[in-house]
Length: 108
Length: 207
Image (cartoon, rainbow over all chains, first blue to last red; front, side, top):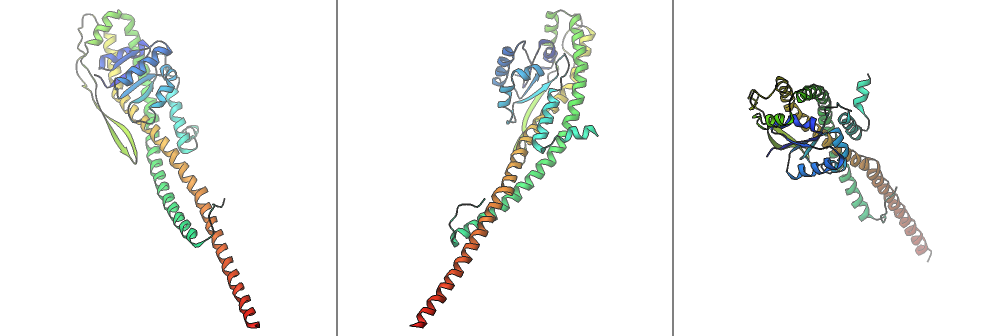
């Protein structure tokens, strides 16, 4: 069994099958949630999700936020990136530091 | 705000011990906060840069894959992908940072292995697209590891900061105020007793 899963629309995840990564094609919100549940139950260490899936499953994903494994990581889909993951990093920074020091350094 | 405590010597001693403990705890937590912050700043910049690179590369790879997909039938694609031999092996473990456990992934990836599918029913585009994916995959693992670390350290930092602030701005000043109050009260009682004694002495002498 593979230890990596990728949930997303068919085109985004399909190619990763070639590397032994478990691909879960999911078209809608419901499918994405079911796929996420299955992926967790199968014990994948890393679960990659596309931005759409991340938004659909945000509650489920939040449960695993404080745990080391499984690690959920957002990847852009074939339709490109909307910067969801970057926004997450910025959110983490402002929570930790009390100010978004990353965007300050980008402005300069 | 003054704590509710009876103004006597027992309480005074107890509060002084508590104050000492609170100050020591505060110092330790402050050290922890600094160390966490140091690690956080180290990892967060690298995570952001890696995220940036990976998203760019993945976009290119995705594009290549989609155009390869148009060239092939779904069935042939499925078959080709199923026969591939370039399997990523992942050994997840946990690394300890202070009291946190962050994931650490050892990736084993056959760099030059053949894709195990036949040449007849696959296209050069597919080879190209998969090659692009292959190049970015090890870094996806690194990204997963680092972003998780960022999240975990950020949460811990926030908790630690709250604790430090609670100690520094609430518990320690409260304890100090209460100790001062009890000290004053005890001194007051001391003076009261001595005046009373002097008064009694006077009364006794008059007899």
